[in-house]
Image 1 (cartoon, helix red, strand yellow):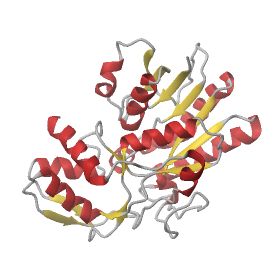
Image 2 (cartoon, rainbow, N blue to C red; image 1 turned 180 degrees about the vertical axis):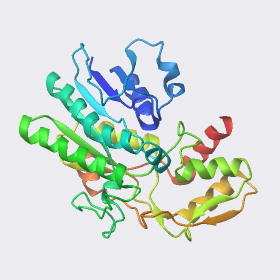
Image 3 (tube, rainbow, N blue to C red; image 1 turned 30 degrees about the horizontal axis):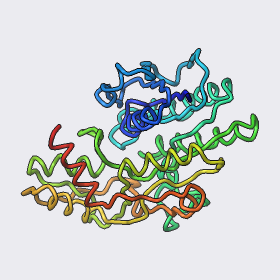
Length: 309
């Protein structure tokens, strides 16, 4: 039986990962300080065997007495609403938190996986974005606290790999959506669904022509799992290469939810990326992975979940 520490395990992606690995007979230690995570995401796991929850800020020393086989570092605010509310905490979890998580992995000779992000590419000037692209990031702009925390986390992870020969993986996760996203998350899909279910205007920033590539949560989790078992140490894009405009996604959600909502346009935020599309060649070739859930199917599942909530 393999034992895994998942930081940020009560968050959106982290909680899905807890469930996925628990179903595969892993022993799970979930760590989260709950500033953006939610215990409701893991309530059904709390009374199960092979699952332990520790409420802790990972920027503090991490003391785990049990032997670990994997450390999966998913702790971080991940939406503009969150990292603008918690800018210093975001920078600290990407730096001090990553350092602590790497230290635990090194002490246990465990495999380490960093949850990075497509935001390391900033407002990209290369399209689609391959892992070799260095990005176009305004490091002192409003999104810089998140972008730079993840860029630093990647650099620190690779430093541990080269200096200590630590077995590391870096998942550059593109826009992911699905059940367990917070209603107040602030990102496009949960915001649009919440507004549509209330028949409120869907707030589209700019002219809505900026693009995103949305990957359903189960596809993202499969990609992360395949990466865990790979021999890759360099970053890998995990995302859906099917590109769609923000306006189109808003219109889809109105249609699929049966909403009476209209579209309301707002001023485009500073440094909001104009395009976002992963080059997934590496993941297809090395991980034998590609997304399987069509966008309309995933949106229906997400809408049903939000409607129940």
